[in-house]
Length: 427
Image (cartoon, rainbow, N blue to C red; front, top):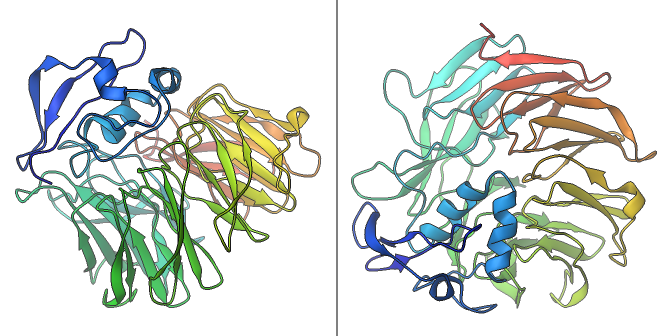
């Protein structure tokens, strides 16, 4: 995007960051401060000249500041909202996947690696001194290959993200399935024989997971897409930074409906029972009719942004928030079971992971929580990692893997909660 300038508020004292000039290949900071009222305006106004609106008011960003990842949120979601992505050298956050034999994850140094269950690095991509950018999305598997996205802000042509496919065993036979002009934050979805990829360039891509060939022309939304699509039957659902929630056809990419919510949608919706559940940065959780998009109910009890994907477990919905809580709601009515609320000491950015009768929750307080969804009690004392946990736990058999934002991976026994640092090997 050319000639667009965006600004951001640093909550706490009402001061605002200088404006960012997006007219060049690399964003640059201009002198002078922009008044906060111009940046945020009233509820629902745009952020400066950017086409993206976070929603809410100055208090909304002040609340986010209280979560430990507020600076990250502001830099990515606001300052560069008018640009194509984060500034050069941004390492992203680290998300992982496991096939039971190895754990696959990006690293802050721009390498994608595979480590075995003993913590030994099996391979890295690319080899040598080359790096491919920051990692936000988790890897996915397609046959004997692992697919992952990297967002490169150092390319001379400007912001670029690529979807790679390599052999899971060796990291070889690399292919670039897709290149986009905006960062890829949401994890690609392999659904049937199609790989669905979302991008901050406002597009949803439907790709052949082997060749990268487009199944249908990219769908263009009204704003940047940071979450993944979620599928139900022949429909795909997702949200945008421009306050919209969409349903499109998985077969041909045609729009089925679009509705507006109060704030930007950063995360991935959940779907089940004919409803779509989606959170926004106005601290609301909406239940929408999956067929029409009509609002069924909304939950307004959270005290901070709802970013992570809710977990639908039977007739209950577990909703993570940057206020440090995971709220337990009746999926039919939105009523909260306050006595079952899970409280952590840090922002919960990522969605919980369900395995069996246990829900695993990663918190920015550097802890992994395990909650029995039958008794609604902790299965074991929280496991303490070293480093902020910003991505969803990964379960493989009797092992839970969590990766901190600094790239350190931990292996935790799902039955007992005992764990160890998996990678890198502790010194």
